[in-house]
Image (cartoon, rainbow, N blue to C red):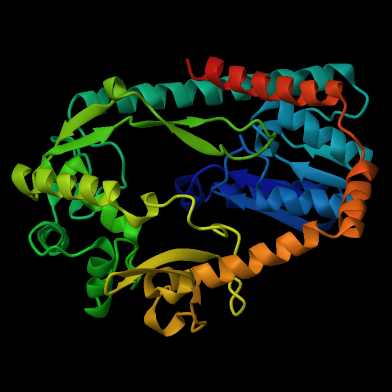
Length: 412
């Protein structure tokens, strides 16, 4: 019988310890012992069994549908999936394709009701164990954070995390090469009067890499540094919560900001003074208040609708002054070196006068709407669309409400 192997470990630590190798050794020995023809091996190194979007499992499911093998050898049901519902989904899918699943450390399923019951119980227990481990880990991290220990490995730019030892908890220390860049950003923004864009371009021109090691700095990176209270002595933990996705097997789609009363402040060494930090916040508020983006909200007819004819990127709105005259333009986003990812990648398409382009488009729309044949064709096309019944609309709205209620219940 043509068989395939499937093995999985959840973390890189398990992978390093050779857990994958030990699983493969057992599965290969089983294939040889039962005189099967081994045609494929599917591995997921460092992928959680609580998710279905795993590259190895995806390939296994695709090739099972193509009929490339007749059975799959797997160590235990929880290697296939740790969530019982996902186990059932994968097992039923493989069964539809005529593929048997043989567990080396569990009885064969086939038509044995007791074996199926045992597999189901094992799946439920594995799911319970996973939930228990996750809850213990969550509470442990909260306890350590309340005790003043930084628990996240991703730390603000300018700091290094020193891990826990037998005699001392984890802590952050100032990493002076990066801290000097942080102080410079604050000084340039407050005392130097430079914009975030100017600061980002200056750092790029001087060859100073961003926190991610890339040559180009982003506005969002500069903005995040200027607003991070860690630089004045308080690193906040538990600021956001992850909302579960409603789609089966998908990774959690988004996070939500928690109320400030739930944030946990962790004291750290300061990099800038309170005075310069508060001054930076005032400049941020003033710049946001008087930003050209907030002025004349209805003056841009084609805002968000235009694409660059050269590179296909969206076009932004730009206002300049010539003497006493204010001139508005539409310009490709990638005309800006920061948005393009470097000066050598900027789009060379010319900017367009907004008043001229708005007038051209408006006249085209006006001329089109004054043609009865065009209006009739549009009305006919609209009438030919399948109408959405009230029941369908209500069902969609009800489904959305149920997802929101489920997310709220799970996050209590």
